[in-house]
Length: 482
Ligand code: ADP
Image (cartoon, rainbow, N blue to C red; front, side, top):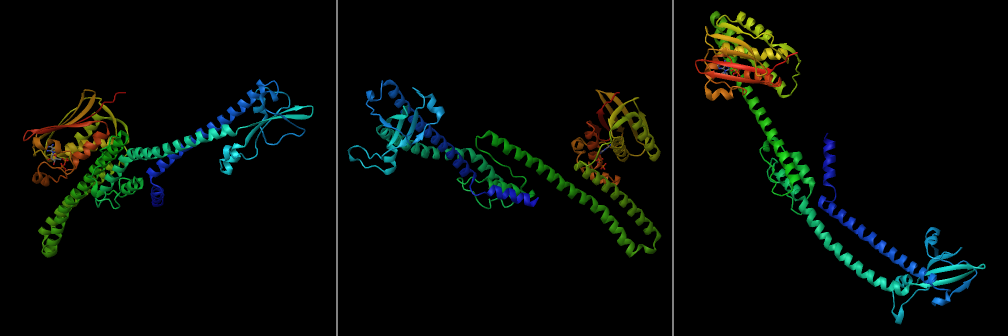
């Protein structure tokens, strides 16, 4: 993992910055284009000369007639012979004709103009057409000196113009690449400020658009600066999209991280009280209770009660941790919701004799889901009804087929929930009345677990409640009919 990371960093640092690499690549591309154009111009010029020579020969009745004095030779002339395929396509093709290009005596120019030996040699380029006649060759030669001289001057001007063009273009290319990369630079800079120390460790100058900075910085983003966001002021839509994606990822990370922190701190807080109670009783026993049976019994009861509470809390915490981890697998089957409600109704009535129980069940209501988890959710509703309904109160469990949903409700005529608290009761560790719920031993986690279960089944939870009148909690699940 770390070697992979260093490899990426090494690659990103590279010798040249991205801007320089792109500029160099683009200039090379344009240079290659100019070079191939020039080669094409030279080739076309040479072809034109050869064709001109060929036409001249064809138009002449004999070689002397066109002012070309043919020499007669008995040996095949020297020079670079044009390939047969080219030669056969040229005008006036008698059998056995030979066409050669060669450099003759260096041509030093008219009027004593001294030339560079390379140019003198170039201007001596000669085209030769040799016709075999009776075992001998009639040879006509065409010197291209004056045409080449003219071409040389024109070509030199062309080269200078091309060079000037390329240099100006190079600046333009660099400017435009820098403009294109600016948003990346801004991303880099912004990403660097997300770093723990806020200021970039190695400040980037605007003309050094090094992606390595961005990668290094993104590697070092840490949890302490998750609230920072990348600002893109430029007009590049694609990069705005990237910045937006990174920002929303940071939003999600930030939210998840804050909720984790809150969760851990709330959990520790919840565990603190029972631990303190247990410690208190242990100290009391230590000092006075060893021989006092009443104190001993009271301490044992209290310790047992707090330990049971802690066990509940730890189980709920584990459930939520696993749900956050997405490691709770649902064992999906067809669940008869009516039967499930009836089962919870019967078992609750058996355990609790302090309330009056009723069941209003619609027959044959089914859903697809995890039987155990759904039962756990309904039990949470039931437990709350018991906890928050004074003894003698009435608790009703009902099922209903409504709007394509299979609904299961628990209604009580207990304490009710204040309107301001209604939307918060599904938050972890929320209790609408601290002192009241402390007595009941609630953890504030039950409803968030139930909501998670119902959500995972594609359903939703509804609550209606009035203080001192009662509460109705309903889980609505997608109805299943075979
Ligand atoms: P707890 O373990 O405290 O019951 P829950 O998450 O199950 O945690 O419930 C959150 C809060 O919602 C409770 O503390 C309680 O104030 C309120 N509440 C839930 N159900 C009822 C109910 N049936 N009647 C009155 N208040 C309720």
